[in-house]
Amino acid sequence: MIENFEGKLQKYADVVVKIGLNIQPGQRLIIAGPLTRGVDIELAPLVRLIAASAYQAGARYVDVIWADPGLRLLRYQKAPRDSFDEFPTWAVDARVAYLKQADAILTISADNPALLKGQDPDLVGQEMHAVAKFGKPVREYISRNAVNWCVVAGAVAGWAAHVFPDQSKEEQVDSLWNAIFSICRIDQADPVAAWDTHVKDLTLRSDYLNARAYDALHYVGPGTDLKIGLPKGAIWMAAGARSESGIDFIANLPTEEIFTLPHRQRIDGTIRASRPLNQSGSLIEDFDLTFEKGHVVKANASRGGDILKQMLATDEGATSLGEVSFVPYSSPISLTNTLFYNTLIDENAASHLAFGNAYRFTIAGGEGMSDEQFLAAGGNQSGIHVDFMVGSKELDIDGITLDGITEPIMRQGEWAFDF
Image: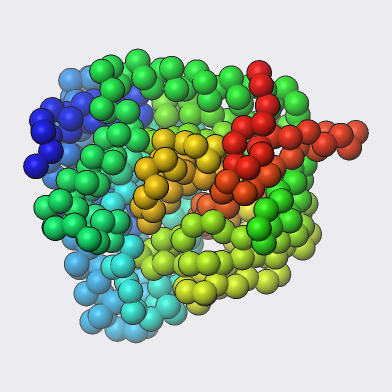
């Protein structure tokens, strides 16, 4: 058992509420899992501490959507094959009720990456498409930072067994909690102060990139030669964000990234993923993509290729990109030398890109744009937003100015500029 586990879990809950969400007096909070799913029932101790911390911060009401992953697996094993386009619309309605009133939303990510191993990829694809179709109202609020929202991780047995397969069951969960505490700075003497320092450093780097106002990026590495154009007015964002009602928050814990949106029609070349992608409980491994004029025209994978193709077939926007993100190879998560099979954590171990929807707040004036205006400005729209890792110690990234000057941004996976 982790020494002083309860104390660390309490600190984690406090950081989630105070730093991640920054709950304000009078706000309500809804806690759930990824869209259509609830929080794994194994995480009840963490959820109770988060609720207590939220009430202490002045929350008016805390609600929770619970889930048992075993029931999801039973659906794949037992449900009629023609039922996977059905969707629990109440799960969206519950979230939207909070979003409309400028309340806070917390998502706890704890998926078992092997949960759907061996299940029909066509059914996985149908479920993904249903989520993309019916989840649009929630995505629209989140993509413009309408409220203070946050995504965090919690250790559960199924996930921990995949990350630490050589340990005993008790050791597996303890090891995963230890990793989460470490990468979220809970082990430091003053986690809140540590986060303040970290956010300031990331903000300085995003300020530098915004001052450079690059027109395009060039990625070069093993199996990679990709150019990505950036739209006029692209904004490089760091850890901190601000809701429409003026609440400062951090959307992801942990976070090591600086990100913006690409121009959806100016992506050409080939990119190779550097880490596996856990998508809806299925793994996609050793994959590469070829883009022409902004869209994937060829995709290969050694495992999970059917799931990759199902994802890309979600809609037209799924074959383009909605995010470009820089993370140094020496990030604390990378230094753990652990593959977590969880995008929230793995994306902060390496520079990454994202299929699908772009965040409106990453382009000047984007929150007030109509769909047509956002598309015309170069933003991408899709029913999905799926991050995949491309960074490694062999990846170089250059920024290209409007007058064609090339400047180094990353060399061998590390920052190549001073500020």
